[in-house]
Amino acid sequence: MRRVILITLIFGFLNAHALNSDSARTVIKIFEENNKNQLVLDFEAALASAQAAQGIIPTWAAEEISSKADIKYAPLIEIREEYEVVNHRMVALLNVWSRSIKNGAHEYVHFGATTVDIYDTVLILQLNEASTVILNYLLNVEATLMTLAMKHRDTVMAGRTRGQHALPITFGKKVSTWLGENRRNIDRLKEVQSRLAKSGILKGAVGTHLGLGEKGKNTELLMMEELKLSKPFSDDWHPARDVLAEYASVLALVSKSFGRIGNELFLLQMTDIGETEEILSKSSVSSSTMPHKKNPSKPEALIFYSRVIPSMAEVIMDDMINTFERDDTSRTAKVLASISLETEQMLLQANLLLKKLKINEQVMLDNLERTNGLIMSQRIAFELADKIGKATANNLMRKVVKKAFQENIPLKEAITLSPEISKYFSNEQLDNLLDPTTYIGLSAEQTESVVKEIFEKRKLEDAILD
Image (tube, rainbow, N blue to C red; front, side, top):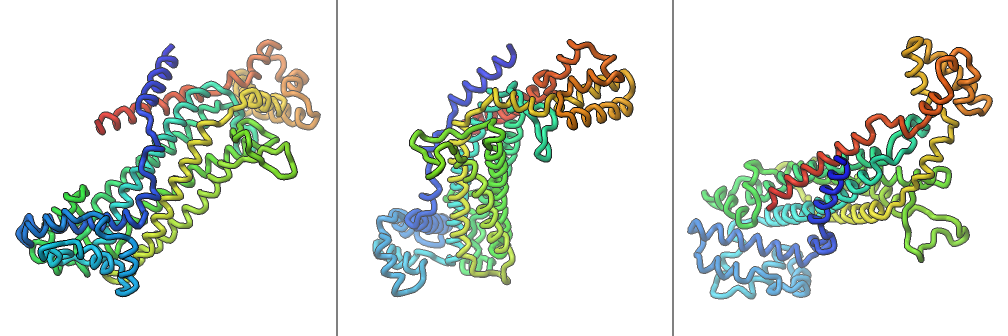
């Protein structure tokens, strides 16, 4: 009864708080050129407002600058034409945009700022938003995994170690390990996001606020408030790049987590195992010459993402080694955009796969018997240990297991042929002890515990957002 109530509560909560990925802003839009240029204009408007608030520039000039901080005043085609003349992306944008700024206010545009501050802050704004989108996808996957875990809390299957049958578990228990790992990645990304929010920067060419005057530090603080970022780090992080590397590294970890899921589902779908199956569209064709094949598509994609994303993260890690106070690190912004986009695509694939995953429960039960009961040898040894001692019991069971292997007979038959062991068990006792569905340890309870913990976290998170 308690389990039914828990499932009802969880499913009700998930349905009521489902995230609609289709309506969320996609990562590709965040990194589009027009959006980047808009963020540059947002920066310039925030800078002007911060400076006007301190009397550094006239209020009327800041108001004019802010009123024109819209990309409709900076068409891409004109910026590209201007770039052919000046060969500088910031100057090209400012030249085009300034034509729309009236009454001499253009004289106060970009007052004391430097290009590197602007584009690094723009990148931070993009990554901050991208991380929110990615978090939403991770939460969607989490909801799917919670549902899958509870649905198969008691679905018994073979637990495997080193590719061999080890002991029985439940499929819900397996999913709960994916679920726990995914939640840790959610927590990691949130931590990185909190540091991204503190990484807006306005410290000048060599990070000393030179060019911004004695009010430079306060201008930086006010400007970040305008941009809805947190109080910035006091240090000049331009040559450090560690937060960017951390962001990339967390996405690499996320990709490896889903690579693990993809790899496991790839293997479980093998003809020789067949315990799970990816549901493909009715028109899907797996092979041009072998009609019987049902090749895994999304599991293979997850494996591939888990190779590509960490390789891009390595580029960002290498970028931590910079030269003196500045280095030309702008090209890594493209890599950070790519790694964010690839992560989004990976999570879309993962959620589609997991939502429609077919679990072949009967095949799981059938596979438990593939070793003729040998998967239950530990249980017999434990029961026997209470009667004759652990070491003696283990030695006798090794002999019985060896006989079962060599003669290809069921474990039960091998036990009955051993007078040293069979005298301790009736036929009915052996049947009960050799039933793998009754030997799953705390698999079901563990599954429920993981789901419940995450359920409570999601309720708390939702309350904070409200």
